[in-house]
Structures are given as C-alpha cells and as structure tokens.
Length: 130
Length: 277
Image (cartoon, rainbow over all chains, first blue to last red; front, side):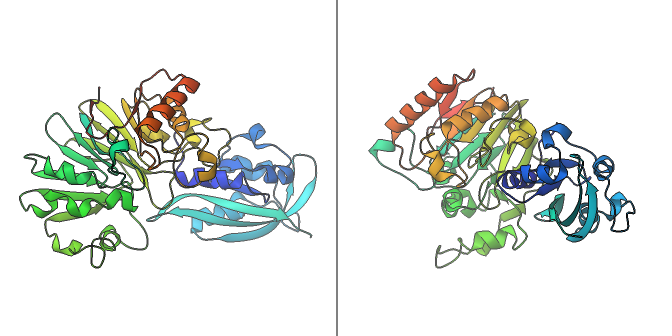
C-alpha cells in the first residue's frame, strides 16, 4: 500500500490525541481513519472496519435526514468538502453499529496542501439533539 | 554515485577539537554521479568548502530540504554563485505565501547579508515539483516530511542505485506504535529499498521525550525507520551540537546494541566519502 501524504499522516496523529470524534478520508473519499472518540459514536472500532470506499462507508451507517429520507453519498459533508474544496456542515441521523440511532452534526474541511493539492478531508462530528 | 559529507551537524555550527572527527559544519552533502553530475543537498556552513572543491563542473543543482538557517547559512559563501561560468540551479520547497526566491531573499539581503539574491544573475531558482523530475539523468523525488515548516526529503536515483536524504525528520512524532505501518510513516516512500539512507539522528532515546515535535529523531528511531524501509545502509546525520565525537560514538554504539540492525549504521563524518553501491 503506498505511503499516505504527510498531511494525512499528521492529521491522523493529531486525531489520535483528540477527545473529539474525527473522521479522515483521502481525495477519493475513501475512509482512511477515524479516532477512538469517533468509534464511540459510530459504535465500531476502526480496526474492525479498516479502509473503506465512499460508496461503502456512506451507506454503512445508514445516514438519513430528519424526515427519515436516505442521504445519498454526495450530500454528506465530507463528500461535499472534497467535491467543492470548501468547508461543509450538516446534521443527520446515523444507525450506529452498536444498535443506537444517533443524530450527529458534522463539519468537514478539505485538506489542501501547498501549493494547491487536495490530499483528503477531515470531519469533526458530535452527537446533537433533534 | 558517491556521497561526500561537507557538513553533518544539526542546528548550529559547532567547531572545535571535541567535534573535529564528525565535524562542526551544518548540513551540506555532495552527490556526484559516474558521469560527473553534481547535486548538493542543503546549503549549511559545509557548502563553503564544497564550493571551493567543486572542480570543473559547469552546472550544479543545489537541493534545499527546507529554509531553516542551518540549511541555508552557507549559501552566500558558495563560490559557484559568484562564478558566471557555472550555472547554479537552486531548488526548494514551494510555499503558498511567497515564492522561493522571495523567501530566500529574507536572509540573502541586507542587513543580514551584504549581497542581494537578485544580484546573482546566473542563479536559477525553482520550486520543487511534487512529482519525480530529472536533472541530467538523475531522477529526483521530493516529498514533504514530518518537520516543522515546509520541509522535504529527497530520493535520488542514478547509476542504477538509490539514495534517500532525510536530514531533519521525525517519523515517530505522536505515533505510539512507531514504526508500525509503512503507509502511515512519513518518509517511507522516499526511503523504501534504498542503497543508502542519510537520516536525522540528533537525539538519544533519553533526550527525545523533551524534544517531541521539534522535528528530529533519536538514533534508535533512525535505525527503526531504516529497518522499516529496508534500507541497506544507514548514515546517521544532523548531529546535535551538544554531542561531541565521544558522545556520538557512544550513543551510536548503544542504539546499535539495543536494536541489532542487520545493516551497517554509520555516523556521518565531515569529509567522509561513500560510494552508493
């Protein structure tokens, strides 16, 4: 497997020290890491999922809007941050893999390395009240 | 391809009897290919003597890993810069706030230096591309690495051999499992399977915890990184100014005894010349 860009490596190292949930994807939207705080919200350890393409992880937690409608991958903040190369925010429901349904708020930012090279995106998220 | 060390010291030039064997000049390394192509890795104080000994080369490419002072301080004393018969090409990491020439000019201009960079008319300045590129048949790959500020390491391939230069590098930063997974290790793509790895080994294991985040490695980390990358020889580089020759001998021997690497571990010594084979 090829080496990740240094920006993703450093972001993963930072995420490993944070108490806030953080989810990291590469420029293709492939999940490359989420931290222990995210594991508690998502209901599954990262070691059990490993890397996962956007099409797979975007359905794994069954994201739905407040009306219960399924959210397509391109409407998720991380996918928007990559496609539009700007921050994106959203709130929606997920079915955590520990069986709980949780409403989360997500802020995703693209990771653009100098001089102008997209290396991925990071999302912080937290449980929200409906 | 041969590698000659003209400056091996990190952070600050450290002349004196106690550092005479491994050297007191800051980072500067000459790479010379079989057909006479000359590359210079970094422009610390060691580049002054290199410039005086460069011989009949008509083109020299100076590759800067980053712009910290110990890597550029000798630039204004590099004789080929003032010889109009030698084409000097200077390469360094790109930034988003100012181009490389502007950033170098912060040092190479009064009051810090009497000559303006703009007056060196036969100097060509290039931002390092992110993709591999070639200079006179030498293939060069520059990747950003784990060190404060914009810093790159180099992989240099010529004469059928490969060399990696990671002068200021902290692959263990914040990584409790280091060296666990290659794809999550800074610098791995540069160093993988190289014949010779020149790597930061500024600290001892005891010194490292109080310097986490400073962008440097313990010698043990350099050995572990070389093992992960399957490097065939390791040159430990960027010696700490506080380590005299005896200390470098001791801390290298202790790290080798702890880790028992299957490859040679050589502390970089000023004026030493190694064939990359």
